[in-house]
Image 1 (spheres, rainbow, N blue to C red):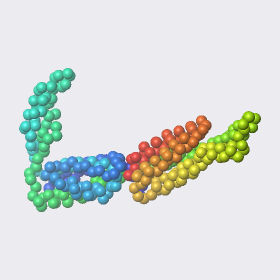
Image 2: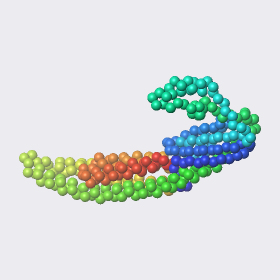
Image 3: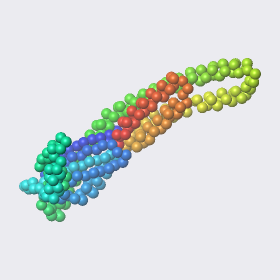
Image 4: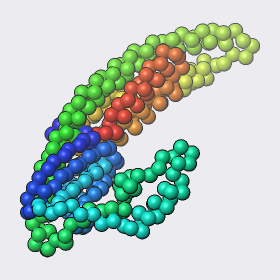
Length: 295
């Protein structure tokens, strides 16, 4: 199973059970799975079955589904909410032309939700059952198209994520190299300080000085953070090769990446290591932006 994005779109048309219909489905990123349906009034309640079918096919994303359907041979008829239309006309007459506001048109007023609704003759129970069965089959094909679109986007994103992971690994190795030079520089600095202290009236004992140096060295050591960064990189590669949805786990790893980068910056005492830490944080932020859209 390739890496799958939560972004996708699909459209299809179909006919059956004496009806013609058009589906549209769009998905965007979300922490969980949220499904919203816009259906003809005569199919009220069918959204429950739609959500059941979609939930079995997808695990994450905000899903927006729109369905329009009309019976073969039926002429389109509209039911006008006269009271709502009259109220809107009164408001338009009061404010139209003021402050550069254009006069309202009848087609614009009729387009407002709840003013004009397409109606169809009431369906018999057997007609509705046949239509819903046909629509379910059509919805399954629509979801296949959506998943294909999400997989295609996921494949593109996978190459970007792997490139960013390589960058994180390079920066981690660079930080390790700089940290080695940093330890040597710290030792030289402490030796110079020791030489100065030995010439004072109240010199610090060698034992106490060694303790302070050891404490500072431990606080400045970033080896543990670098080892964890390497571990996170390896685990991320494993997730990208997984055959299951991994978006949530990748998002968690991004938090861990960021935590190690923050600690590295806080322990830095020279400009070279600070720059590496800041570059690392910027790359991790870019990585997380991509991960936010992974199923």
